[in-house]
Image (cartoon, rainbow, N blue to C red; front, side, top):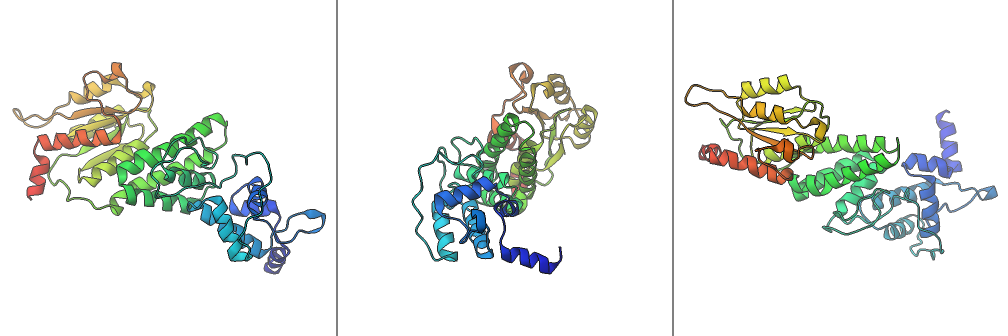
Length: 350
């Protein structure tokens, strides 16, 4: 269609289905906003079919923007109507069953630490920080700019560790649960959210103040065990260590045993973190092999501290290795390793 045809179609008004596709919401959401909050086209065409004029579209876009930024839906609707129609009072809501889970509206006060319940884009969030709700709604709507903004704000406001443990992880788990219970649905939501979480983790060291690097100190090697594809926790630990100036060598997902051993021998690390999400990928023999590696001259041989991390490790596979419960505990364990050997004090003295 040419530009004149596009302009004519726009002037005639969009159907509810066309507007829903344009905004990335469901038609059910738009109908719910009509019934509950009076967000509706000013006029209806023959046959009572909705036709959304440009001003109506702008009003709905404002509603979407406000709810995505954390404004409760009733207040968002009042502001949107007042701005574009001059009508601020909401019509009385008819008695009707709750809106379906596809309704993306819901509270998300970024300043509130924790509140139970409440919608999060139809995801089973439970008792979480309010940031999770806005993040989950943006993910369900495939709103990449909003995901980027919210993740960046969480890192800046809370720091990497809290942002990971209390914002990113609960939202990722909720998406994963919905994916498992919905067949092939929500795959695109999980992939988009994971991509932006990874991007936020990699850019976190550029956003946050960081100390001088521990010059001359050996690095920490971080790797997923062979066959383990879940690498986001390794990226989170890499970013958290960067906050402390700890040098790292991150190898990522599904690292072959030979490659891991070669890296350890070549870098002489202070510690080696082996992440395993599943029991099937947690290899106690590999952990023992890494712990037995040595380097350096006779009389001053070095060995790494090996940290098996992740839910795949259990009592049997842990053996005598230190146990770290989460990101914070792992960072503290590695920090003590540096302090006990004087590497941190030497770096600060410089």
